[in-house]
Image: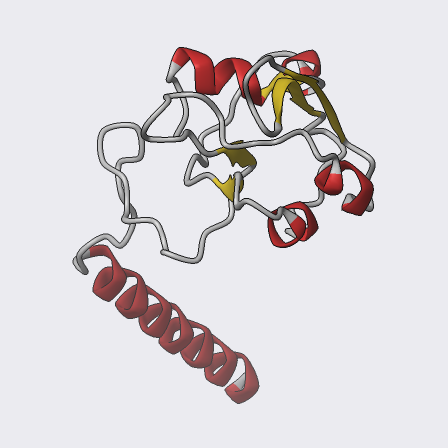
Length: 149
């Protein structure tokens, strides 16, 4: 009989302690952010997918189509094509495609670029209902349209 009363008392005390913790947490301010309406600042070291850098004078991509990034990529997810235009010293990029489903964001392409034409974006909200949206991201087209910088 005494053992049953002791267990009942221990259980009741445990219930009160648990409810006390719950009530304390209930009245604390929330830590989360209502995401689509407000966002937290992004860390300066954040590495999103790669983007081509636009030349401020010409408005075209800085890329010279040397294919160093394509060779340095361990995931083999970059395809670069370019042509030599008349009156220019270097080649100009005509196609720069990234298969983001294979990219590991290692940064080898950014490090090896001789003209610093590739950098990491700050874009983190990449969402799609299909995986095919990330197979071939045309970075050259984005630079020419001015949609990504």
